[in-house]
Length: 73
Image (cartoon, rainbow, N blue to C red; front, side, top):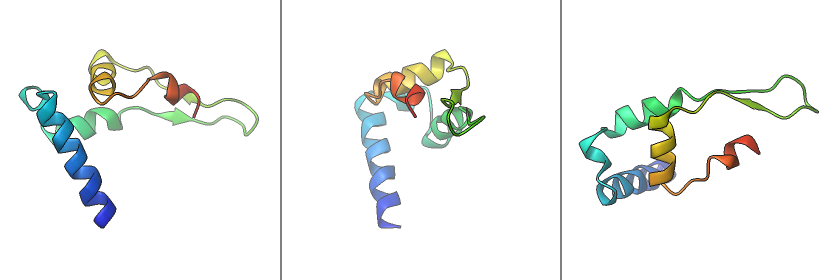
């Protein structure tokens, strides 16, 4: 429970700092990121990541997350 409060407050802090609240609520932001799917076909093969939309790409940029990290998952 404590860790979820820390994560929630960090999301809120970044959203305030980057003025993302003009576009999304926290719930809408998480719903948008929830659409990303990672599929594993076999253990030896790299994971397949669904296409990242422009909205999702902008969210990752605002939070300082490199999208290439998803593909190395």
